[in-house]
Image 1 (spheres, rainbow, N blue to C red):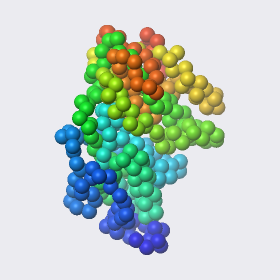
Image 2: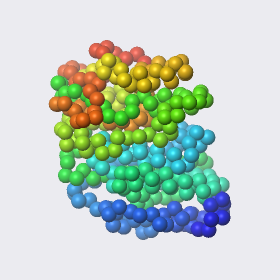
Image 3: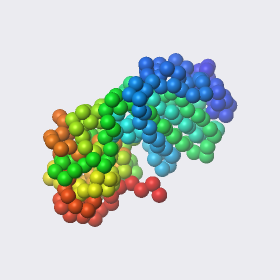
Length: 318
């Protein structure tokens, strides 16, 4: 595609010319034996099992183009899907992306989105192996991710047992803090605002946790308490979170909370989109993981310091 076509709209250039521009020159990892350009892609599955997850981002609901660049949106779309694969103890190998946008969208914006997708996928050794484009009234980015367990058993949500410790790795509450700062138009706190726009999953730590014997695991997408509630329900146990053990997270957010008048605990316990990993272990967690609670016997529930939490629990899709 000629450079001047980058300034033209998707409708002016046409679907197939745009797709050709987006896939030309991209280098796939060795696990991709057939990439974009056929009716389907082919990925190697040496483990004999494939982990699959899917997620969608809707403009105005999951991102705002007056806050995020198209490149940011692409990175976020890959990161949040890769985190689901990490939470199973696997590694992402390929992504299939559906993109809907108004026909007047500049080709340059679609190119920047694709560059963001490829940059984030490349950071974990994966590729964008296919997808589709369609006209839509607003941006929609739908991603399906495929992953490889490399012979490991998947770490599911239902394996936690009384006596296990609860541990986390990655940011907790930072994305919610960044969102509030952006919403209120408060400057400074660049790292927090950036964490909301482009999450930072702890890539590779899902496999580390699996190898260390994690009994249950999930990523923090909807909120720490909301996601731990899935583990409590699936495992049939109580998950008790300690605010003392989350003291460092509280202190890291204290200045931003003072600037916005917010409660840091609401961000830490009820904020989402950090895409940290939280898991349970029968023994000490791996290096870098922080113990934040324990698993107890009892009717399935999540408590904070032994009591119910009266604040918001996390993201609701509807």
